[in-house]
Length: 266
Image (cartoon, rainbow, N blue to C red; front, side):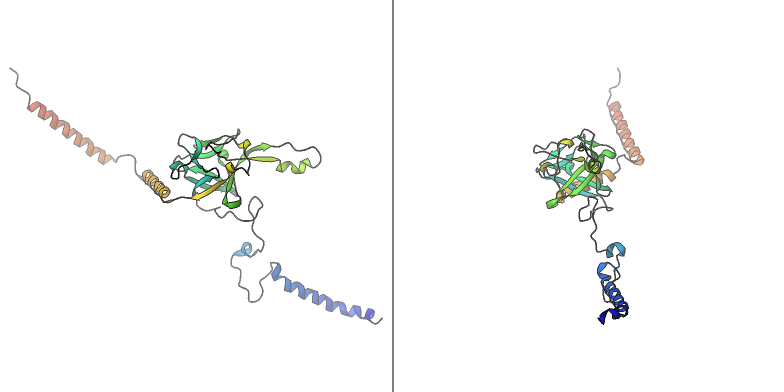
């Protein structure tokens, strides 16, 4: 009976205790660091305890984004290396050191890459019929969405071409319309031939690629190619002038010998 009259007097003390508990919990919820904790020098993003996420919504970050192009060999789970020929042909190779299987992978957007054959100078592309081809210039069909899967394998799906799946009738169809697309993937079958995009799945072995680091022989081939590109193809003018002068002197000596050995007319 005596407790009820004392409640108005206890409310200020209860409020102070609640504020103290909230202040103690603030460092644990992403607030300022507690006393004695090392300062966060990486900015607000580094202090954020939540894990950064990639474009696909899964955990992890594409560390290569924003960096230099990666030189890799795309090893398919069907034991073939993806290769781009200078003629524009796309297929797979079982050779370990094949120059046409050395690729340059460049990030063009978040989770989107372009794949270029270093020795062929052509970009991997997929047309609206799902066929892989090699393009001389970069265009929108050369953009592929890169996703990281289990065991380090990646998939490469066309960014602009996919299969529109019909949505079921009903009010819920409008909500599922954004995800009613089936991606078309880069795929090399068990015979080393590319499969058409609409026949592929992300779970197929033919669609899984392992980006392999280049070996010593591969690096040597790339260095030789770069040296040949940097070497001037045309002969300097002064060397051409000296070369033509030597040819003219040899021609004159040859004519002089022929004229000196000619018999006089009777």
